[in-house]
Length: 249
Image (cartoon, rainbow, N blue to C red):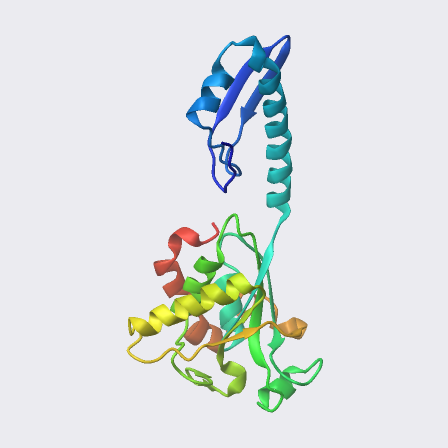
């Protein structure tokens, strides 16, 4: 029985009629070989020679195609956890995160400005859209960082930032993301992890509007500003302490 999964490990190094085959699959595939098939593959029986050639060629092509496809594939995740300057500074430091964009989501007004969102009347939340490689960091791991990097028990508030635009929210992009987020939230409430109920909203992704250019990469450009030093820097220090192994070098 042959099966494929996310991890590996089987290697063929065989020579048939002048054809030299090497199958070394690492990081992408796992080859499960039944005892019976393994016996035939490694035997020198002439009746299995052609079968071995075909299997080895197919596995070579499949491994290459899977490696190329997985290497290029990225997914999106969207989180709101207060001021998007803070959110961006946290997630852009994670290994496997290839891009981040601060913006607005969840409101009624198309193409809102920062000033309009700050009124609290547009219904938008300040969010971060994260592009990530699931082969390097999973959605579950992103959720862990999300919930451990803000207070998900305060409704429409993070610290001194108050208003619906600062609400704790997850905008899911797939049914799988929805299920994982709901499961994680339920477990937090079941175990009373914060001593209070988690109020994070979990909603289907809506139109995302990229925020003005001066909001992008904000902490890295303005690290000496008072807000950055007093509010964002402590969050970064907490991130480095808790998630050191997940951070980019």
